[in-house]
Image 1 (cartoon, rainbow, N blue to C red):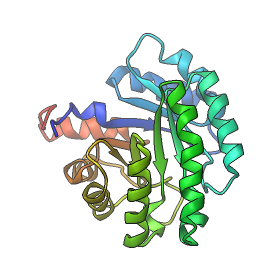
Image 2 (tube, rainbow, N blue to C red; image 1 turned 30 degrees about the horizontal axis):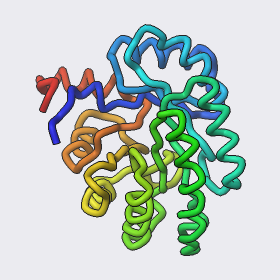
Image 3 (cartoon, one colour; image 1 turned 90 degrees about the horizontal axis):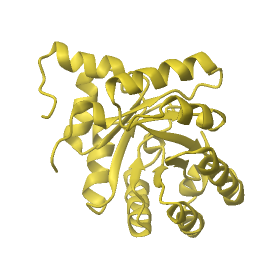
Length: 228
């Protein structure tokens, strides 16, 4: 897969529960300055973020069922609809991790089958978060099978709220078992250029992090070419 400029891998993110308007203003300002792929903000800030990134190519992403994923499918659908009304371009949906751990694969398949047509009807991007740090390899592979067939845009490693975030091993496992058409977003604990590059080399095409500026400026200090 052809490499993009480093900045276009970055989903510049803030999802802390104490998030302030000033935090969103700073995030969006940095995203426009560095031309990141997207900003990822809490649902209540989608409308503001959309206004702040106007005139740029930066997308607005938000989270659904965050951070634990065990809310009812109907609740997730309501969140998705409201987020799209507010202007979200990309929906990062937390899978029902409890259902995965209990092997309730029909529930996982049923949820994605209800969600996909709604997001697709508006031409939006869907990323599914499976919290890979708390899953076994077999559970990850089964998720790759189900979500690969469903035709999602991205499978995402982590919310950032579990004890273990993204790992090179998880990204490699995703890439081995997902269709080529499904991209990978690595997130959770990625705070510097070296770690981000490891994730990209393993197969990630998005990096979700709050350290986007540090990552791209770190690349410049190491004299890394914009495409590598």
